[in-house]
Image 1: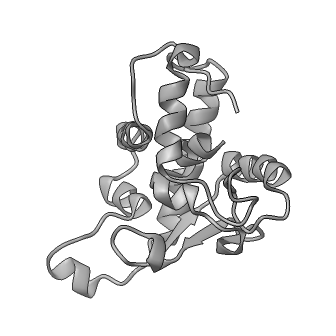
Image 2 (image 1 turned 90 degrees about the horizontal axis):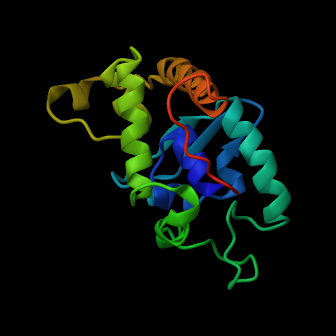
Image 3 (image 1 turned 135 degrees about the vertical axis):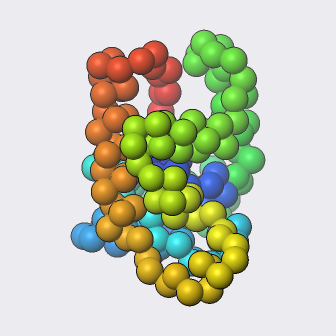
Length: 176
């Protein structure tokens, strides 16, 4: 489920693994990742399209009353899984996936490539990925790009649904 969420919202494996329920505004469909958990040290808003919302319902059933989406089985719900556990889950299931080895980061890279390949502007994808900008634009452009991120992730949601249903391309089944 963590890997699916990563693929749907394109956030880093550490951000997904360490996510807490208090970061999610489910009524408005936004996940605000605090600056203490982002690579660039800036808080980040990630839009939650319908596939993400469905995943979150499934995750909630499994996480119970833990404050974490993905509580560690070793921590009795009092600490999150390790980000490395996502990489390990892929390695442990390569036979099931029937594919060449890949990493959680490869999901993020493939998703962003598919997005730009489907007409979503690179600038919007950069904002979704929470990549750092350089130069004067970084200083002067304080716009949130929330509407663009929302539109792009809704489009990505539709593309993923087509892939999952077999309407487009080869599908790798990812069991819970």
